[in-house]
Image (cartoon, rainbow over all chains, first blue to last red; front, side, top):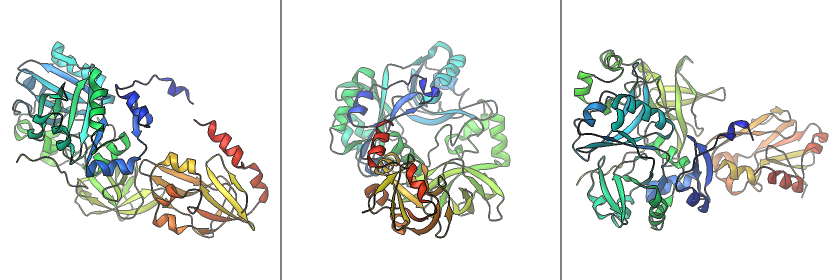
Length: 370
Length: 125
């Protein structure tokens, strides 16, 4: 036991349920969170891709920003095109700093008189302060809400039994719905590469809602371990690992999240730096890395070219259960960023053959409006 | 069957005719979670007690397997490199990692017997 562990860990409203389910709880972003349940990461991961998984993501920050002009005002802090969103539509974007670095990544759903914002757990206090500094009292921190993600190909059928209107929702949209009679804010979105939902509900209803969904035969409780392997296979960034203040959205291969108008107009912190990177090309890029053997290449692994010269570093890496092999992502110099480029991953002092790979490793299976 | 001994690093060791068979304990595989990769030492390698000799990786993380005794590696269990999940299923049975020709029988005295190891595990939770 070290003195560092004396820090008091917070618990989500589902803590007692996690314990009851036999979860292994670990400290994560100041919370005691389930890293896995008795089936283990491999089975939890594969179950999510095959049926549906329920994730407690109540540690994440939920905010409401009031005002009909909130979409316009928040654009001073993010490069995403929030004004282009129709009511009920959702977008992925980033808070940038003056150097174009990423302070956090976030989801914004737009409504006529407010925005619904979800940010990372580790950044939520800083994000709230940041938003309040620029947007003032219109920023409301929703600490009385839990967040439950339901992900996987069966998620839609499962949720439809408790919230019929959820079935018709488009991917990347949000709506205030009753789920099993409880007042929720539901978005069709997620962090696994699968179709699915994130359900924001009052703290008091969280356990009841989770139990209702877990009672469905298709639904298994999934821990943070599988959440990480699922998002890695899906090529999605983990803040603090794949993106941080030292990486810009351009280098992080997130330019897709920035519209033509915002690229041209700028008007967000660090815009001039991003515009220069679009013009001249970034010096380095986030790419997928596929080791050719069975050995995983993990975060921090150095990457070298055939001659042994350093070309970059892995920022997330591990074993992809659906790929059934090692997968990773990281940054390489722009000249080495083309998919198929051979690189060496230096694992325990030995060079392992790997290749730059196209992300995602497992195809996204998001819901397309029919 | 020879007596089995255990290390605080959660290796088990069984000695027969001066050859030690070494694996990881059931407790260790449980802590690791689903094992997806195993790296074994080269045959003929001289290892010192406490030296990292093999690597075992789960979905979560990489861990090292230490030599609980000094000696020369005489065999490795290729079956677990081919099917790492065996480490979860048969940690204290068929999923041994490597064999070492003992350099110093005296080193065995520092290891725990089953009862002492079980008592040690109770101090960990």
